[in-house]
Image (tube, rainbow, N blue to C red; front, side):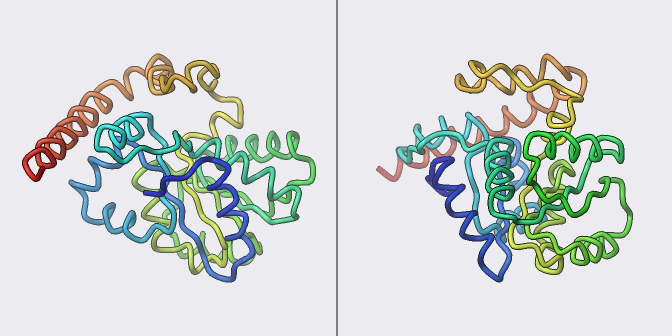
Length: 236
């Protein structure tokens, strides 16, 4: 995981958009950490990432507890938003992949509304059966930035396997960010984002879907953290 700020990550990816080889970005949270311990394919996808940033506040707190402090959170939605503004100013082409057909279309329209110079050269919903067809369509579009809102672990698995064949120079998974940009759901207030409480806002909005996921993943994450802390104490 990279100990970098949002601005540093943006600078790195701005450079990656000028390089002739792909850069795969992962946004790490507690759920992803526990998944990598349970799912070999997901762990392999993370191992293939060129840049891993701390998306979750729990990751930032855990790094501090382990004596490896980070500059702060670098959320996928904030990093991608900043990257889209950069693409608009520099003429880089963007492809949006994920969510439903209507949502990805609204998302593209809203992003264009916010950044009129943004070149969105293609969109496709996330309910596809043939990844080879999708990656060929992305390659044909001439996109340089691929934003995948397929949810985890599907978006990471897709990018790890198919990003090189798309011809895109940067690929990043954004989870449910397209729903936020399309106006389907509201993002947490800024004070909650800064306090690291964005997860609670999402839980309030979707309790049936997220409650048991949060309980399971956070419990497993705490177990892993305590085990690492105990191991460090014994080694010390």
